[in-house]
Image (cartoon, rainbow, N blue to C red):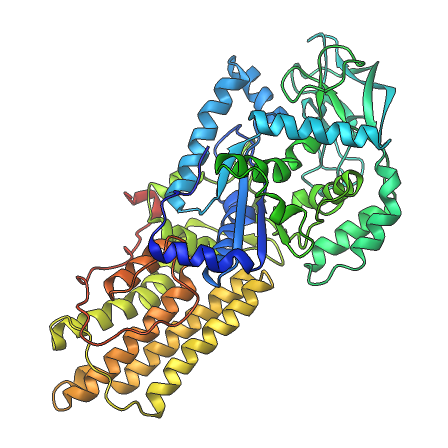
Length: 569
């Protein structure tokens, strides 16, 4: 479990009092399987966008609850455990710890990062099941499901592979096709094969609970057609899926690894299907967070308050579960908020191929963190967020973006201005004496940059917001080029002082805007110019830097990258 530190400064206490009446923003982030290392596709698809969005909303004074956790019950875990000859618990312990360390190194601002293996999660999931059962949305049915005669067991969805009947993708799984993104049942597959033995499984009868998903056909369609501001590929896919017709789905599975069914009329060896159980983590994690802080009802401010907003950050392969199935489950439960938005990203590809932990496509997050600074990795990935289309990313492009954009534009600007203050004013912020039109214009440009970037982030257009912020940095660079303080220092030191004081304030404002993307370096910039940094990061504003403040030492914010294969941290 990973939580944000509970210690608060005085300014943080003031901040949290202020947000008691602010917008309640639930940032719900996809739960990664604790079955292997996470790669850059995961980082770009769901996790970094969520942290940028959460940090922005905290910076403007909103009350954010950002939650997720490792999915410890998914069949990828049991598949890997069987392949390695170890228990699922060993796989979970190994990769959950690695994922938590990745998030810590990247500076993610979780309020709670937990797992689906907690007592709270099991209790909440079982209560959710019983609510659906009481309302008549679950029923028992015996159906034929695949059975591996060589292994002597029923096969969960992901233990069956074959050819997708819709697009012909040859490595489709029994729950979903990575080729076209459609959800599947194992019996849909052409030429199915067991992942355990490679043999062709046979159908045998087994009894399970089924969910009346078909009952939500019209309510879902009506709700989806009223959504505003959703990305076209998300809303179009979701509406098209519902219009094709929703069919009842199995709600339990033949497994001994998962959340037990809270009624005993199915017999042993049955658990709640991980796809339904995992999405319920968005509901259980806030309750666990509330319990941990000693205020068990605190979660309700984000879940039962109709004014609260909820944003679900996932990759596009998870659109069906978050834009269709999860809203239907919430409708069936009743009394809980439906998603405000599901800003699913498209795929980040590597050499034209979709990243895949199971197929080894795309290097791990940890590999990159061994070779570059966390903020540099955050910048490189954020600059290519695949918000509207699949985007390819190579190591060479990462190096180019870090060196030519982050280092040359932003890092160099900060270093130049701080160095000149040290050179000409002994490291003390000089006085501003009579601002002229050019001075006022550059400060106004920084304010406009913050306003524009904020509007874009509110719309979950995070990549354009970053571009706007970097354009603001270019404007300050242009201001310096026109003012030439290294020249005016020879014959007009007061003018030089005003130029550098204005530039410092502009930089501090841009650092506040960049803080959701570059939290480590942005906080460092504020510290260097004598500004206090609240626990939640710089506020979304251009701060005032009084004259007479002694700056911190000049040091490069970012290291220039060589070829990543040769880099050493």
